[in-house]
Length: 262
Image (cartoon, rainbow, N blue to C red; front, side, top):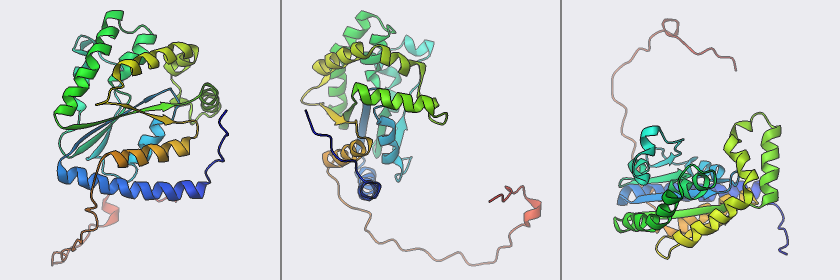
């Protein structure tokens, strides 16, 4: 049995995260410069820490370059489309990195376990997904897939914490609660998904996520390691002189001002 490691101190975590976030800014500049198309999928158990990691990635980056895609329930029209169709418009163009907070792998997980798709649709997904991802990669896209792994006991602890805290309760959906009741079903579905879609060209990278802080640091560090980049942010920028002339600001009492309560 593995020995539990000591928790990272807040100072250590924040120091390491600051370093990684500076590197993410450099990566962002390189993606823009080289017109790279980067697509990162975040999947895993409910409450495994995907959202927190995504939040730290975008905290210091430009939302026009590094954007999040978190699709809701498909519409009736979308249910009749080719399955991947609703995801394709959100894929990155040149100079973008897109972070999918859950992705087309919904079909291999919640849709299959909860009966939201037919067995035929599920098996077709397992057959066609490697082909779909191979096409993306051949087109020049950088596709990175992360699976956040959390233990049964840790997931339960996080769920209870959300239930007890009204400010966190919004994170706990009815589907999250159902995932607890179907723990074994989701486990088997994950194993089968890996069997079909963990390929040499498009592997799954598993993030041990019982320790949220370490999971965030490890995932971001890995993301930076798999995309070679150069530092373009150290280039000197010269501030142009201010436009000459006088400007008289309109009186405050002629504008609708936000009350200064603090």
